[in-house]
Image 1 (cartoon, one colour):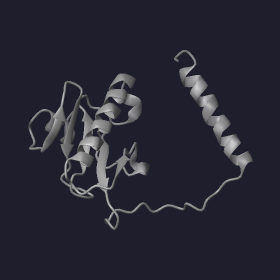
Image 2 (tube, helix red, strand yellow):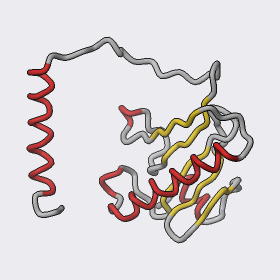
Image 3 (cartoon, one colour):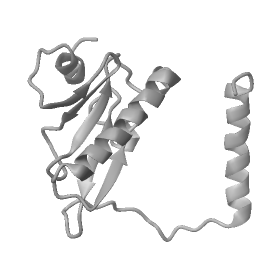
Length: 146
């Protein structure tokens, strides 16, 4: 992959503040933190979107994400909670098109906000209709997989 900052970081061509590394993932602090201790876990094999990453790497990425979250909590960094954030596509606010999971500490009064219309409550029929569409898609995609 060319012109990918995360691939350059993995290759050691850009500086990084590394937390953990193995043969599949790298955990590091971001240069644009929401709060101090804001980390990212990135797969070492470039994948723009989740659908391009194999499930084993995805499972490992989440396992290491869980461990990094616990390490943040126990590190002494101000942390009363943890948020995870993975943006998959431009409409989901993905800015760097190499998949990565954000892991950031939260505390009361911190500057991070999630702005959404939490009052949007569809009725059960609408929920069931959407669920059926997604369930059909799931069956079509993975009917041969457990």
